[in-house]
Image (cartoon, rainbow over all chains, first blue to last red; front, side, top):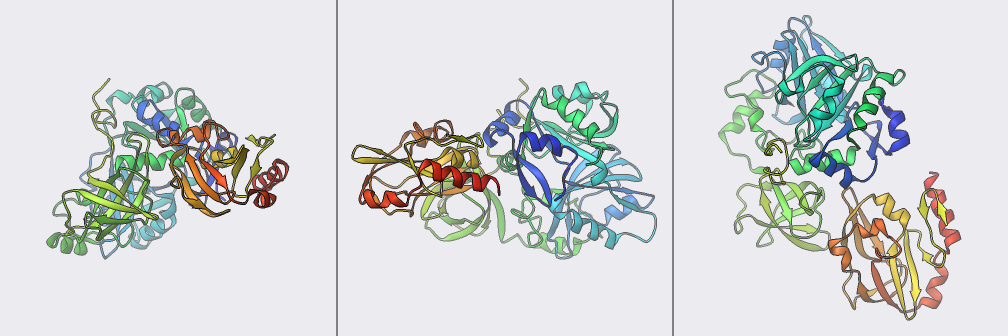
Length: 370
Length: 136
């Protein structure tokens, strides 16, 4: 099984689990404690398992332009943006973040479970010259520093002025004297940063461990379990559960990533077609009065007719209720937003909501400054 | 007894599925073990049988859920549900804090305890069972 440069820390501090071929921390203390540390203070995550591809060269911009539905070349240097890799049918191969470091220098960060397939997809569509694609996953480390205190936790380790770094912007800098990219991004709903350090490997992990040890002095180490409960509470999709190759961006409430009038990318013909006809199913959030919804549970309307399925479900530590992302039929009726979810033998009452599930006045990056 | 960070008290009977049973006069109190609670990590939700429900030995009578997973609650013995621990509805974390005391789940009036107890594990046998699991 593969490991990350931070493995020795995880091994002595965490309950470990296998994820996408990596031995990763599932939790260090409890999921609830780690989850609430991120919502109230700051938590750090080892996300070194995520795929990191360097795409460079004079044709790098035009190559990526042809791969994703979001405008690439018109982005300013230093911009990080969320987008999708689509297949010809408009289905979602993966969701990813592209960072434009310079005109001919991009960094692509993809889901660990899809990294191999994404790389094959990219190589298959790369022009014969003008683009150099390198997998830099094994020669770098990546950490997410997330929560309202993230800037204060990370700032002492870098000369980059984090107060000046806007959301979805990246800076090339050093972190504890090691070459790094810091982006004001994350997948928890909170303010925070993702730090990619170039150099650390599993055989020479010291640089990454030194940064982690410093960060953990003023934050909570968080595992994959809290990473999942945080992204669900924020309403963000997980590829493989909520979105997949059979789901198109309109069904997933991700049409906002498609740049208006953009043509000529893989899947663009299918996307134009979807624009003409509303999707038959849409993504919704659901909150239950009792019980915990799980992936695959049935969603019913108030007359108990089946209208959809839970794609991700768990317990919200903030709401202290079961929450779910669901795929429901658009035409399905019923009274208002009332639904039921079949939780094993019982039908539990709930209502459809628009995520995030937490109150944005109190939690998340939009919250009023305290 | 403490093994691998898990507390396994004397005087209780255990199942391989990590429930405990404690005889208290005419009733038997049931809960999940420290090992089960720690493996679940943080219990956030419990579903109980109803009072007066009949339960069968080793059959599911409810669920104990963490953020990550659902675990079936199997009854260690056959009998009738006398009481359930209502405190767990608002404070499921009691199962993690105090699995053998405040975190009890169900009180049963046993049907056939004298013979059914023979197939339950004593603390020593349960300890060996946990050891075999943690070395996998």
